[in-house]
Image 1 (cartoon, rainbow over the protein chains, first blue to last red):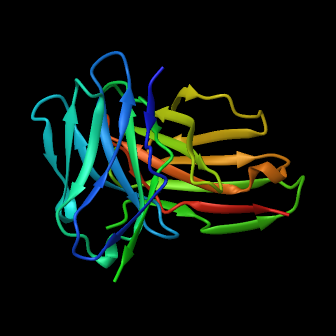
Image 2 (image 1 turned 60 degrees about the vertical axis):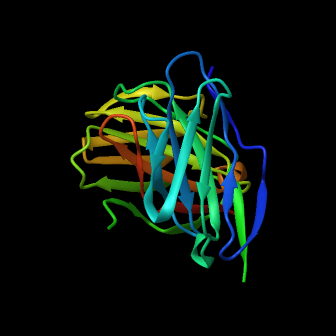
Length: 115
Length: 110
């Protein structure tokens, strides 16, 4: 069965500093991976997605992620954090690209931004 | 730009009542989902529909039932709510793999 581990429940970072959020996945096959962000009292917004191909994917708002098959990881990065990045970030894996494939989510990492 | 709409935003009810939540997507996708997000922010799939047909039904209590009139709409009915049903219910739609979420319906059961 597929699973996602986000080892950091909470990360605090200063505005302007760099950010890395860790994600490890477990899946026997070719994974499709995603990062979502959830701002307070809102639904999930797609930040970026990985389909088999280039391991580094660019997303919205300056986010990027790097896929590593050897490490079973899909870490999210941002070079310079803004106060508006204060949110919960979820990593997710899908079993494939067929209709109806469910997403399995990690527990989320809450990012707090210090002024 | 919101393309997955959910109503109501909030709902407060008492144990044993019936509730219904609505979801509509204007993205033209064939597949829609319901997820439950608990107080710890954990997300779990409940159902998925493809072109009005149920294709995924995770282990959820029988009091939960999805209803789809067409591929743009997927509603969720809960008969006789329980305290553990308090959560945010998120609807999503998908063209194939990535999913697009609505703002959620927050249910509080007293």
